[in-house]
Amino acid sequence: MNKIINLLNRVLNSNGTKLKKQNEYMYWSPFISHHKPKLQINIQNGNWHCWVSNMGGRNLFQLLSKVGASKENFDELTELVDEVPRYKRNVKKDTEVVKLPEEFKPLWNGGDSIVKRHALSYLYKRGIDDSDILKYNIGYCDNGLYSNRIIVPSYDSNGKLNFFVGRDFYNSKLKYRNSPTSKDIIGFDLFINWDEPIILCEGVFDAMSFKRNAIPLFGKTVMDTLNKKIIEFKVKVIYLSLDSDAINDAVKISENFINNGIDVRMMKFNEKDPNEIGFEKLLYLIKRTETTRFSDLMKIKLNGTRKKHMEIQR
Image (cartoon, rainbow, N blue to C red; front, side, top):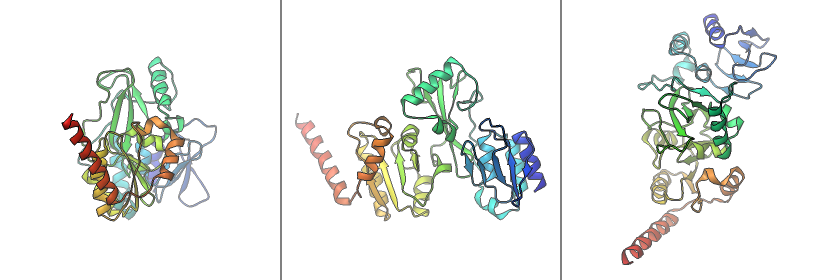
């Protein structure tokens, strides 16, 4: 345990203060400035929580990821906790290493620049607030390959980076430049409670708009890794929140999950994206959306066939 404490002291750049509670230590928060140590860490089970920023996690790998620790720090922690069953069970070896751009700057951190102001303005217009920025560790780049792009990282259940989205906010022809890695991952897995209903969206901004248990698909299809986890964890309810132009994709996804005994609820947006209608209306839609049945899917398919037939006749 002393070696883990020494590692945390180096990564967090402060010495932890032992609390009366066994294996509990208090550190200065790396997430927000405060006059007292507010980051509480349980060295034994890895649980951690910042009492000012309200950030927290279930293991120390999540914490290291949040503070941008080096690969050497991760390797050292892996060796130190390798004999602890709790960690050994939760940590899987990555076959593909994902790194944030070298120019990445977190937006919740201090400092000011014109580029940063433009990035924040873009996010605020899309309904992303300061708490979202802190929660998702949203940043930006002001030079390099991802220059003038907002960077939205995605972390797996162990708090390790598994993908990131780079969204232009200066009206470039290329709106998105994402991490050059596989999309067959689970977006925002770190924040998902699999015992609760989940929401499937196309993109990260749609997912963040719901403020709860929403997974970006990075497209219009459910990849294998996500599909397997939904079935393995026996998710009971799925709200399907694809854009209005993706009705055929929504039908295919719904059929798959209904066949697996899952209560699917297709949300309707009337030619608007989820991110465009605001949080309050999204909550209203969730409450109003009922279970989608096979008969509903058949009607959607039939309407689509009729529209195609009418277009051909024209």
